[in-house]
Length: 104
Image 1 (cartoon, rainbow, N blue to C red):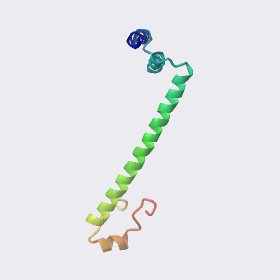
Image 2 (cartoon, rainbow, N blue to C red):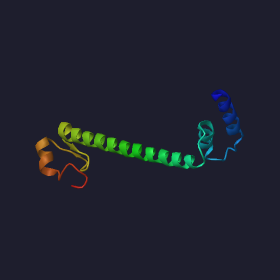
Image 3 (cartoon, rainbow, N blue to C red):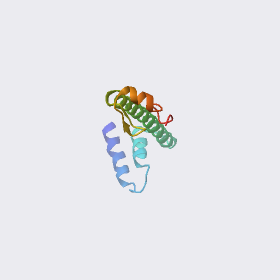
């Protein structure tokens, strides 16, 4: 029974126009017997998930950037925000206003 329902839903899905942005949601609604309100809530849930992933990616990138900047400061006596390489770590600490963008 499940296989014939899948074929029926796929046939309905194939008949939809290509300009309809909700086709995947209509297909899922047909396949799983969802009502018309669920596609909107599914779209909202998908948007929330993408927003959370984007925030997590941004946080991970910020952490990687901070680690890279600290590496440059301590290993090469280079300040990205000053755009200068110093002769020593002591000179960097004396001359550079700080390790953050706000300090510059």
